[in-house]
Image (cartoon, rainbow, N blue to C red; front, side, top):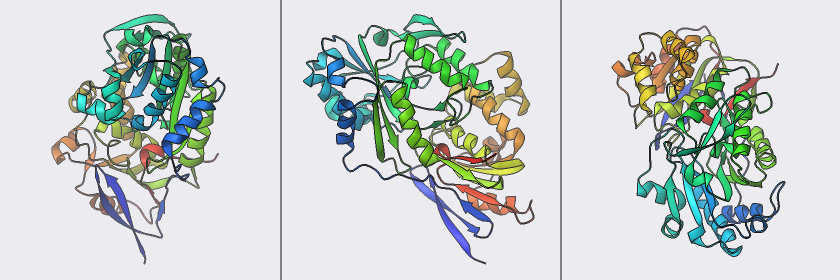
Length: 417
């Protein structure tokens, strides 16, 4: 009997698991190669954008240009995307004083100056004003047809040209990240974010789906109301290398980028597995349970009802968002968060409900920095290592099918109908 030893990213390190190779399939993203010169790729995309004139033509005569950038919990390579953008703006006659970088926090915590510097690079940080979005200082711009009032951070509202940057990846409910998502939820009010996020419990809200996805359609309507002028999105492979940069029209460029995501991360499996071992892909994707939820969500598409998921996520910053944490710790059963979210949608807490949906379908082990009492309090099974969890789970099945997802946050397994 041969064994496969598989290394799984865990925080900034790795943990190993050994599995009988007759039982096991390992599903990696089908990586495209990284480009040789990432900044040159960004520059190329700005000069030859999709569905728009080159950036330098569009910004002529503008007085207040805002660049939206992702926060520290996202893998967006802002330090690579932003310098070519500011160079292009400068060449078009826009001075550094007329440019602002706004970090879209959504509902996440504010940054330290060191984090801002890490995100955009020291040179840009020292030249250009870098500020966090303020969720409490937003201006109303209109209401979407699904009833989401779009309230945008004042500094973004006042700009006369908005460039949305980010990375494009699968999103567990909005279909994909990137595009208009830098604006909504990135730089909107709590009210806007909650109304949009409530759509995640509607039919069609799922990873890898755009048409007929109410959450994505609402995001894009909101982005249009707020006048996002231009996007610059990086498509990354699982090694965080840039394989493509798409720039230009917020819809057309986004759709082009999504094709690359599908090619790498949508992976067909012949059937669902009894046991799924899922690593989120290490730091920062497993910085806390709130972020690690995305890996769990993708894993659920590949496990049989009543099966077992082993989620490998360090969670060095604990559970994450406060309301999410409160709901996970204070509910007496997995049914309670699902009941509470239907009574009143609350941002942050929504992920407790999403996790509990999966907990109702499968046994889930959480391999993390949490002790046994916290792990079990939040309805997960405890094991010290993924190997311990696997050895225990295997006893439940006769000749189980095991699927391993080393990059679960960005791999969408699906059985073709």
